[in-house]
Length: 520
Image (cartoon, rainbow, N blue to C red; front, side, top):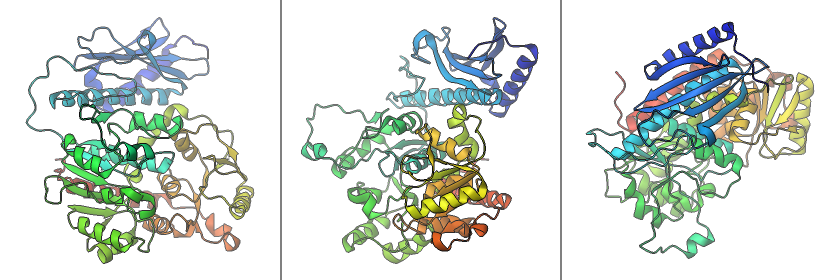
């Protein structure tokens, strides 16, 4: 795209948008100056804790802008803002002015937070690996350790892989815990493999870092990039309970949280089930708080064996706070585990649409016409036929949000987590049989139809739909489905008010469980 000179009107409008955004996000205190280079590029310079960095906002011929992150040579520390050639890293190649401002603001906030976290890590006596655009090296003078440090919280969930919903719930829970003022870390509990089983004993001289910047998983790069850029820090991988039990003290945790997703569904958790009930902790050790957040059994019937039930009941009694994702799970906990549980929101719904929009702002493109996004995990000829009927009724084409749908929809090219989010964000209607497909339809206020999915668990759908009085959006039998009723408009004002209420209640559960005083 051809670069052009920035006219006075464009400069004024962009500067005003920046000024407003700086004030909204409390960044003006770190701003050095805003100026125009060579009558073409709007430059925004920041300085924070003696680290200097800037952004180039370059106008293009299509009235969009590119945005670059730059390191500044004035920094008197060993911080490296970007390791890219020429000290410049492209954040977005082409986006509209408002989105360009958001890119600058979001990255500035990200850098400030990362610099703060690194200094805290140095004060605690170790260097925190940082991935992404900023690579920070330990300063020579560590200075005194603070008297008060944020709580360190370990997050346990099903191993992250290609499941978009699983990845995003982990991201959302980590962010929510961080927003509460804690330092979360994803405890990277993996399924055992043949290599791990054959090499459970390591040489005592082997050095394995406690914290890494890689997920160390058998997964394609399409999801790995999001995980390693947005779900940090990550612990070293643990493939056995014994290994986890031996090393968990290295993380100096105030609390551990199991969840969300189907961590308490035995056929999914398999050999990790005991660890998801925090069985790796010494039962006599009460120093670490044991918590579950939106843990899911995945079904409204009890699926544990007798042995699993005894194990779970024994460890559930040691929990400081238990919450579950489905309403039916509160009764399962009471009846089979002898424990009281709170019904809370899935972590993805604890964050606002704006939070996710920041993740994919540079990927949003003008959509060519109205569209239905389909996200189908278990395809069938009956579903495909019904989807075609919906498409014809609405006069919209179907765009598939994953590889597996092979009947009615065309395939979208961007298979990243960000691309998956864009598919829902730009949808005019959604067809899905996925729990998180429903969650993001509700979050982004997209009218939807959900196919019941008994294979993966009906309780998950009935519970989330019931929270918002949207049970009528679920199809149990496509042959007898009333399409006219399914296409009835949703009262999004009512839904959003309910979501705000539930979000507040769920975050308060976490705040109380972690013993974090409310903000004054």
